[in-house]
Image (cartoon, helix red, strand yellow):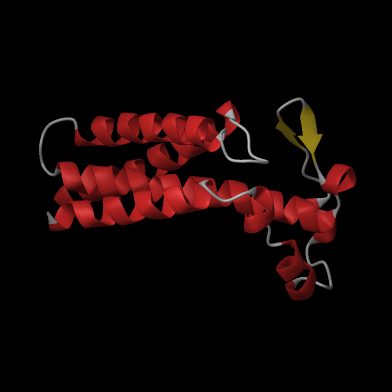
Amino acid sequence: MKKWLVLIACLVVLLISSSMTYEQQSILPELEELLANKPFEKQLALLKIPYWDTVVSIEERGYFPFVEFLIRKLTHLIGFGCIALGLYFAWGKRRFAAAVAIFGTALIAILDEVRQSFTPGRMMSGQDVLVDLAGAILFVGVVVAFKKIRKV
């Protein structure tokens, strides 16, 4: 049962966060205070990220909303990476643990996006599912590689 606690904790955090509206999750006031000097603005201005039917950039959104966008996507990557690790370790030493973790995380990501679409001001995003899946593959891949290296 202890093995499942990390996964359950991650899923509870996911459920709470994806039940919040965009306004409830916004960290713009904190970013404006914390990053008042707009650090790395020139470097970040070089980034232009295709997202939905638009390109997200400082030019298109402004500095603080762009930084918030990056933080949100990084949160997806890390959060679903942690969910994947929770699944991976909960599954234990059984066969196909990495595959179960990655495909299980993909299923959770899809279900979460569907559920999130019922939250006011939020919408379903296939691109978020891809970011979630990338986090799962990255985190599980690092653990699997580390385990293989340790055996050598």
